[in-house]
Image 1 (cartoon, rainbow, N blue to C red):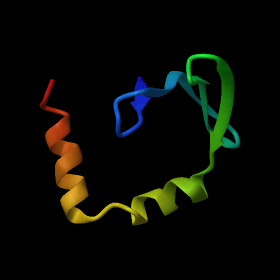
Image 2 (spheres, one colour):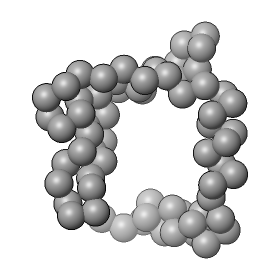
Image 3 (cartoon, rainbow, N blue to C red):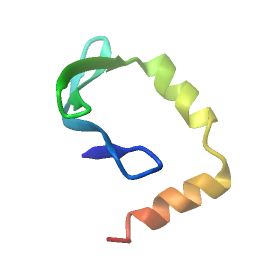
Length: 67
């Protein structure tokens, strides 16, 4: 999975997501050069859901059916 900046430049490539006792471990490359490992804790995941409005949730669901 790749994440892009608003001007379509590649920001990060996520290479794997795995479960661990601490949460989700996300491995990837930032700007195609710097390896990165991040941990998403259950608390932070719950905080992320608070950022989503109903309109944003509908947009996410719609994205699943687009190419």
